[in-house]
Image (cartoon, rainbow, N blue to C red; front, side, top):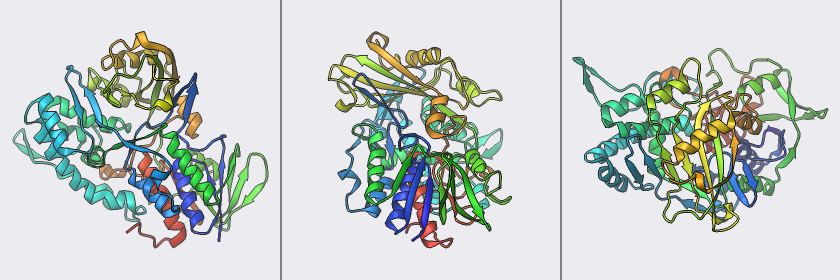
Length: 498
């Protein structure tokens, strides 16, 4: 039995802690803030309750697996999972609308044909077939196995089977997600539908590789889910599972250093003073924080995948509304930017700034636990903004509300109050200095979208969470916990779940 110090109580770190405790190790989690969950926070006021992080859950099987492997109580005994339907309603720039059924390929095809005209549904269906092939090729190496030592293999060739396209007397294949949309979907609205899945993870579809297609595939193949009471309830359930497995938590306990002796970790230093001895350390922190904790000593080699830094963040506006939720309202509505190219230029240009008219996601959960009574509604608006962005909060919130009114006419007239959360709030919750949110790992693109391995050059030091393999997103956080536990328990020969 080893003494293991886990730095941070984010979802990936708690997933690793629970699995390691079940394996017989003594696990202590040190969290610099006063609570658990990392990005899965909660804001409450006047009887209203809001998720401050993700509002929907893709691939719940990852968390079901955690609960199966760490105890007899399944996930559904600890939280109530609801498959949202429709999966999303989309309001396109030209005013066209479509509501897409959840995890029903035939239903999506029918809805697209009805809203956009034939052959929109067939083209999207054919695209999903190709996206599934990319998923099948990358699922194990990018999600279920530790990062390969010869990771360059993943970086070289795009696994998406692009359709040959004749252009200027040449036959070409799509190399980016935007080219997939333009050449294979051939409808501006379908291209917007495709691109919004990349943008939601802070990726520019014009430079994201074609195999970014796996992101919409995950949603349309496995569905989108909501947790009653908000996704903070998932964090609570994982925390309580850790406690049941005798994981110890120490909140308001900031780790200021990772102690190394003779090339391997020996423990951690705390801000309150003193050294805590540990044979193993699992760090659920951003790369810059890890570098500081290690005193600037490199834990990655020249031939390793370099840790990602920077990227995009989120602007979030929580709205407390008078009046009950409209009957049949979609849980999620994506209001597309009137000028997608201008939005991408603003977000990903040489000097990024918040777009004047952004794409906005509107979340309207049908959940009595989030409101003081049935005559009120809790709505959350989110938009992608550059990391380190410091917009005027009220002006920026106004832009999101203006966009949301395209989906919810009369929204302003119902407003009681609003709470705005900027990248600075993301930074405070996650410890990432610029408030950046990591994207999932993707193949090709020269490896720039891969994340650093969970193991390091320092013996006994492992990394977990969105800034290490397999990257950002709730499913990926759970997978990183499983990978770290496997590497600790089985050693370097661990090759992932079978």
